[in-house]
Amino acid sequence: MRDTAINHTQRGFTLVEAMVTVAVVVILAAVAIPGLQAFIARSGMNAVRDDFAIALQRARLDAINRNTCVSVCQMAGPGSTTCQTDAAAVGNWHLGWITYVNDACTLPDGAALAAADVIAVREPGNPRYELTGNAGSAVTFDARGTRVSGAGTFTVSDAQDANSPHKRDIVVSLQGRVAVSLSNDDAPDETNDVPVADDR
Image (tube, rainbow, N blue to C red; front, top):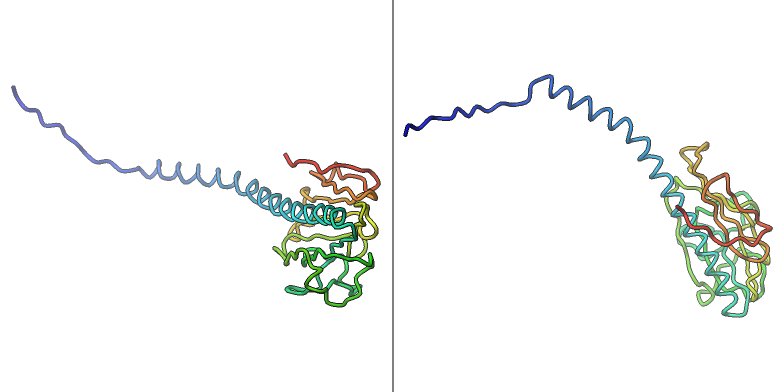
């Protein structure tokens, strides 16, 4: 039997193949990047919304369990144990918040909170995601879990896109229940007792 040598030649990409590959990658990137940016913005706003809604729900449960008022107030500044009272800064909840026992059921007076009264502190997060309330710098729940005072509606928005369709609303009803919206179109009404919705 005679051995026949098989000719193995190495062949690389041709210029046309390389250009087609680059064109496909560019097209895929152009399609995927806007979707990825929207996903990042939506995820960031959902995280802020969920953190704040959970803080409000826990404050309400603490008020019921402790049989006294519990408040969530806007933090005066990073690392602070003082509630915001400066009228110019009231409503900027993305600067952080403090949950504390408020036996007197009063509005914040600007004094530092006693360490024993502080239940939880949320430091400022990503400045891209803004959390604003419609009035006041504190939400207070009484021993029955009813909202005593404070903003009823909060909005999470993207500071980099004022017209973002992904804004989220958090509403504290007069009964003290916390509801969140999945989009601008289904924002809950603060006068209704609406349970928290799941994000899908």
